[in-house]
Image (cartoon, rainbow, N blue to C red; front, side):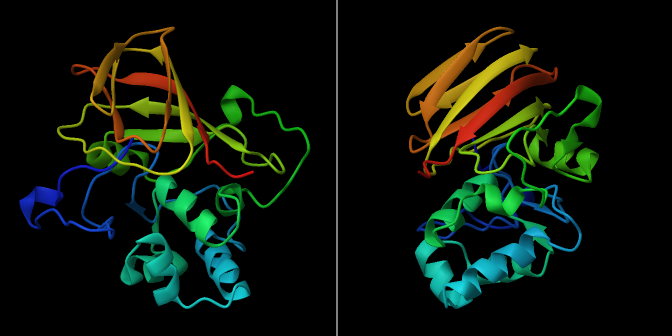
Length: 228
């Protein structure tokens, strides 16, 4: 579920392992959004956690870039809390740093059991309107405080979007349509899904999802990062 075309055609699409997340729109679970919140406490932001994890392993930003394929200027922006990487990028960062992805998007409080009531869900993005208009979705974390979690559950709202581009990353994904209509493409297979329909696939396959037609869709998405 990932990248799109470059913004307004101002840049051509890159090839190779590096991705220009600052200009490409991406799929709803792996998007880039400046000033995006990952539900972390202000005193322990995603950028701070990434920097600490990198320094604990004695890696430079350039070395981390080589391991993940994420450009150094993007990594610098993430550590400076100027942007949040797509979740697929966090999967790669966690693998490179021998750290679970949940470490980066946790609220900072770890509990053995957590309950998130419907009126207590927190959007991952602070600027929902801007994210929706640019990337075609926004989502809410359903388990930011669960300790040692191996899955990441979200309620995702898809909104009409012009173009999407496939992505790949480690792990698996499960999607259940709650409202509206959705199109999912995995490898060379395209499926149209409605309320009650579900799809499960390996994230290593090129994939993307989008809402169908001009109406919003809401889905339950569970991402497994592949971490043991």
